[in-house]
Structures are given as C-alpha cells and as structure tokens.
Image (cartoon, rainbow, N blue to C red; front, side, top):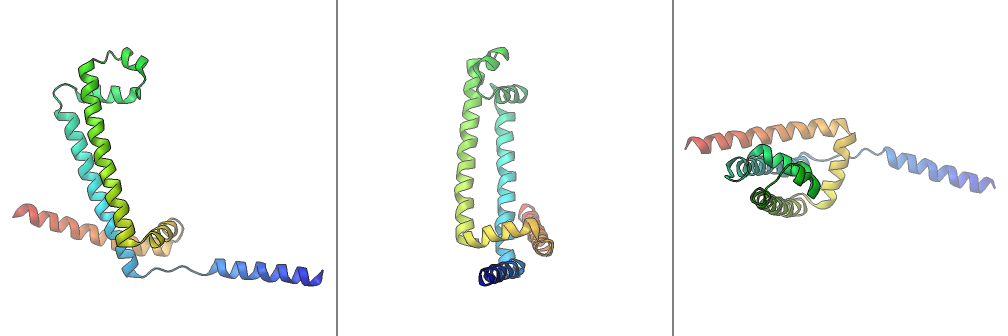
Length: 161
C-alpha cells in the first residue's frame, strides 16, 4: 500500500513539474507566425472591400435589399415577406457564390501557408500560448506590429510610384 501511494505521489509530482515547464518560442518562430497573420489580415481586408464593392455596384440589388435578403437566411417565407424579386434573388446568389469561392480560395492558401511557412505543430502550440502566456503575447505583438508597419510602408511606396 505504501509503495502504491508513493508511486502515485511521484507520478503526480512529475506531472506538476512537467506542466510547469515554460514553453518558449524564438523570435524567428514568432516572426514566421506573424508574417502569415499579417498576410491573412491584408487578404481579409481585400476580400471585404471586394465583397462590399460587388454589393454596392450591383445594378439589380441595392445594398439595403442585399442585407434584408441575407438576413432571411434562405427562409422562403421571410423572402416572401420582404417581397424579394427573382432578379434580386439571382443577383444575391451570384454575389454569395462569388464570395464563397473567394473565401474558399483564401482558406486553401491560408492553410497552405500555415503548413508550409509555419508548420502545423508550431502554429497550434503558438496559437494556444498566445491565449495564455502574456510574455509571448507581448513579444509576438511587437513583432506583428513591426511587420504590419513595414507592410504599410511598402504599400505606400508602391502607390506613390
């Protein structure tokens, strides 16, 4: 019985010791992660602008009507209540299909960048640590902001040319 209790105590002790080991990431690893996240943020902004452009520039469907149709969530009774025409519904579906295709392409590239540029293991462990480890979060944020500012400066220089 004493041996069993001693064994349980030792296992518990080593479990606590292992749990307390601090996970650290190099600046290079944080930079890899931040580079992909800056890219993703820029792509999301472009996608949002494109989507809004499609909605605002559609000749058949006004933006307010688009929002109403979207809020119906495909419910035919709600669509009837909103008096949605067939032309409006076709325009809405075309925009949504294009948007779904654009987001699908983004996800495919994003996953490819995670796997290729960061590595799935590093991505998962760093993402988890960023939620709970203030020291890593602070270091990451500094790197992220630096890359974001660099990217903004490059875009300004390109637009001036």
